[in-house]
Length: 104
Image 1 (tube, rainbow, N blue to C red):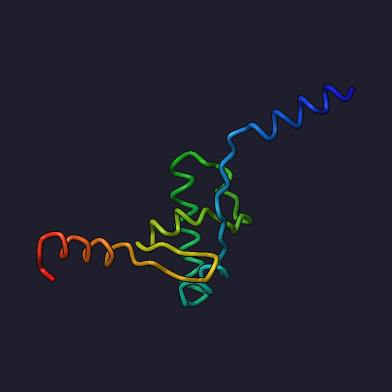
Image 2: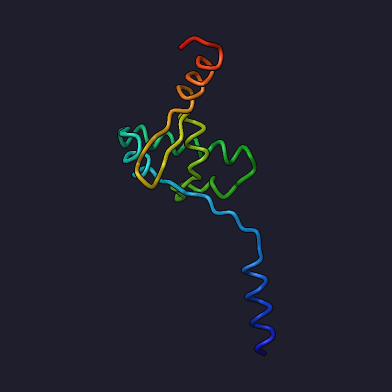
């Protein structure tokens, strides 16, 4: 019996699981400063994208959390849950390109 427990534990610890940060409308409000209605629309849009990708789980109206990556794709900038810091993807890319081509 002890061998079975060890095998199960090894199988769980060796599995390649990836965790995704999930956000809800309140998280979006806190991290972006958007209103409640804007945050709801972002969550709805994220759910629609996920359903179109084949994740039928998000078709349920009671599901209110979506992967943060989808919200970032919609908004066009990264969200950081640790410090509530946002990194603007488009500005950062433009700054690197300007520096690369000698504009600055």
